[in-house]
Image (cartoon, rainbow, N blue to C red; front, side, top):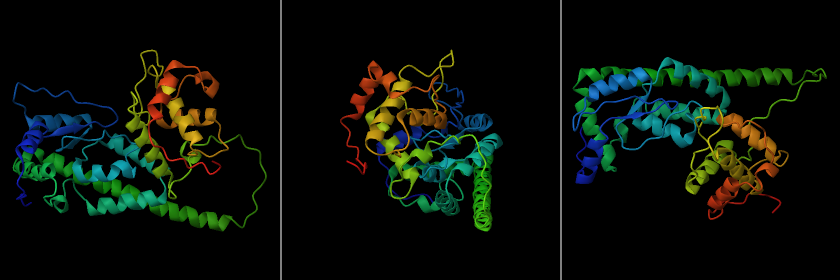
Length: 320
């Protein structure tokens, strides 16, 4: 690995040394790392993080990793470029289940990215355009001199190979499924009464530029811009009594009604159905399946509506 010849400013040197090696939590797990004054053992920290099943980055900022959002293009490319994949086998099992939920185009994009970046901080990224990233390659040279970090580098590469294999196997399964569906299309199905199927939240979305993922990412970006107390698209820990955190239900309800009125959900679904489905999708399901009337006069609900009012949200409602 060549060392970047980019001149790195004092600020980025301080920043990069402060966040020399940082844990990226996986499924909200965090490692207790002991620092003594200005001294810390990065080698020991790395071993503890690996034991926890978390990941590692050399940058100052990161997005925590969750299985249900791992393959979203909003996050996946960043994980592939700048995160050491040191998660454990149990998390890979969770990923294998979530691969079943993403569409073929998403899978192909993930495969392309993984083939382009078979390891974290691939040399192709060392172009000198970003001072903090350039400093990461100086840190990489230092880490590679210490055999203690060999496990981190090896685990990163092996996990990437495993995830790539899972993605490639899924594309084969999809093609086989399409062939079977084509063969069965000529067979007249028997008329049978089945219980109604639970519609997933993603299937309630109106695709933007042909992709539900684009719609999902746009809505989440606006919730982040509105500075809600919680990122409602992540799983929020429950109270000791097993209920949602105060105000969380109202945050979800405000998101649903605003984006429903703007045309982001299919018209055949009611507020109550969308609210319930979103709770199941994010694992933030409330104790009851509330209707809009429950929130209409709620203080928190009105407050979060005010958070969203100043934002420029594109109206895609075809009837407006």
